Amino acid sequence: MTTNLDDVVERLAPAPVPAAPLTPLARDLMNEIMDAAPAPVPALEARPRRRWRPLVALPVAAALVAAAWIVPSALNSAPAAALDVKEEGGYYVIEVKDLYASPKVYETQLKNLGLNVDLHVVPATPSFEGELTLDTPGWQPMTPFPYRDKIVSIDQPEDCAGVGRTCPIGLKIDKSFTGSADVRLGRAARPGEEYEIIGSLTDVREPMNCVPFYNRPVSEVRAELRKRGVAVDEYAIHKPGQRGKDAQVTTSVPDSMHVLGGGLSSYGHAGLVVGAEPLADALVKKMLLADGCPTS
Image (cartoon, rainbow, N blue to C red; front, side, top):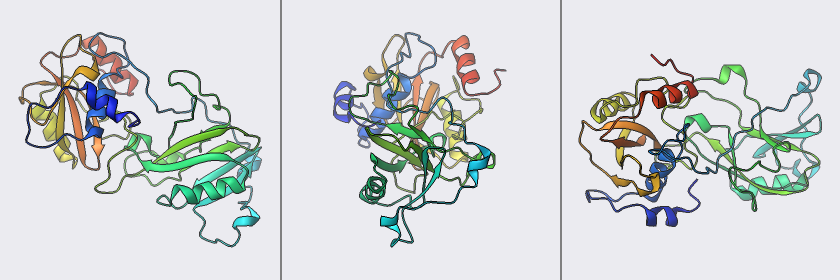
């Protein structure tokens, strides 16, 4: 998500309020949120995003669920391996046991399986914990991922739903996979960490999911986030007909401005997309439905 920060920062207008420097991540965050509305309207145009969720989880036969963990013989001397690996129905099912290991540690274990996969476990907002994003060379966002049937995140138990969950994190890779892929897997952030995979504040498991949010005054939304332990640091001021990349990013706006969107930028910190004009009711309804929330 932060791959082309220099380009994003260059296109964004400089902040008119110099009280604090704006981080490249926050600028990118604002741009992503405002260009990712679920409906193609002039104010919020869609553009490619480099995050990907598999559309259909691969089925696992019940008889295979109880299969024993299989650790490659080359790794038997490492009882505290960063990755635990088992085989199920032609797939390596890989659970990350050490979420903070060096990518080189993961690489070694994956290469011992014969897989050319670079795995990076990175801080993600709650809706992307345990989810995959892929930066595979040659793959163009908004086109089908070429290995959709080869690499997916592991299934989550039903009791893992909700805020504060502790769920296994990992991925399934087809044993016959011979290509190369660069994979990022989301994990919970630690205090002080910036998020590398970012969802909307209204996504499932995010702080404002199904909380009245869209078109509310900045002062009210800021107070709601404060109750949830989240501080608002930055704002992107959006004007009708303007693309997200052209928004003005600042650290202060009038309390009366309407909140149009937002997302966490780092642990305990968020940015909001705001505007003088509210979103159309039809668009708000569509966005609420996309989040699985009541529309009235």
